[in-house]
Image (cartoon, rainbow, N blue to C red; front, side, top):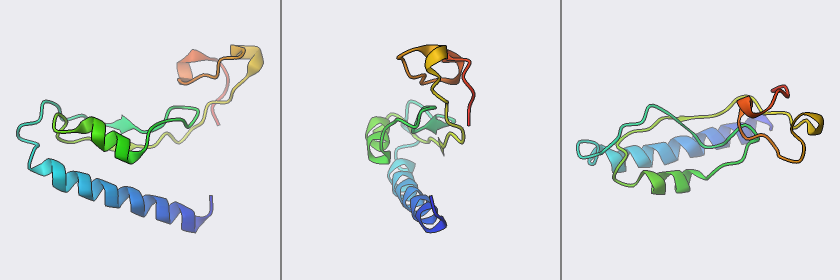
Length: 96
């Protein structure tokens, strides 16, 4: 991914988080949970969108920090067969 695309992705995530923060600050006192962190994708880079995440949070989660997963799990057919690993402990294949 080139620098411009990376910058646009970061800016869109920040804009979404700003909107989420402004919506959640009024609800944070009545929230059931304040989560420490959340990953939008798993180790094979599948996951939900930011909009889906905010919908899931609803009024029950006051604050949550989004983290990316900097590594991707290699899918080794010899190691895990036809099932692609979705968590790094499901296989001995290397991360890259």
